[in-house]
Length: 328
Image (cartoon, rainbow, N blue to C red; front, side, top):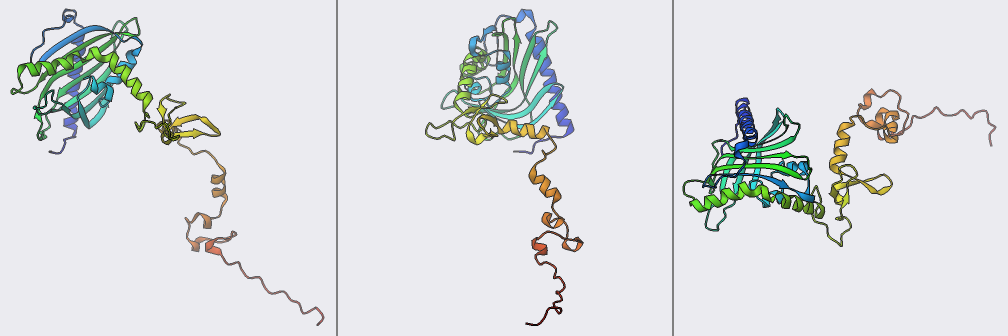
């Protein structure tokens, strides 16, 4: 695989492609004449609907699911590329942009997997009417990399737009997929693969329910499933972010076994507080002589007063004159 070009010109090119694609996607979702879904063909399909999430979640939960490309529940329901890894990530102009390499699993056993190097960008926006919205856009980006045994595909456009309504559990969802699965793919197979991606927005409630179930059944940090005979693997909610974590991924509160914080929240707090708290050990270190700190050469010590390895022999005092005592 050729080395990835991360120069300023390449970053500018990726940013321009992401911004143009997102703006075009958001403008398309606002068109009134494109409400009805179009007939599927071998490369493109559109889906527009009003989706009721019910008790599965709300707008923020659905947007968070699209922001996680490797979420197992979202991947299982076709919301993302089947398997992907980031190559280059950055944020600009309110967008989260990443250059990724992903694999589409073949729907039939005798077919080879498809792969692509693509730009993925997400953005939250607000309409003129005050409604919040979320957009996720994918587009192929040529990097000159080799694809190995996989068949390269061209993601011309794959976008999803979520708009909230007056009902927190109801969303206006628009999905558009235009992927060239290569000329050797039969039309009925290409139609099936395209339709699965375009119609995946209908599976959003199921994906949200499965994501919550997996979150409750596994540690939110290490993703290990607790064992009923192991006390260390039992899950407990974090008092800061409310995520359920195992004993190895959380820090117990001082004197309270129930007050727990995951290591992610502990690390975030440590970064916010740059100064170290004053403690007894630090005070002893400040009051200790230089010989205990072992940072100053022995030759520079003038009056050592502590018994240390560098000054382990005490100075000999002059002998006491006992001549005035009578002889025995």
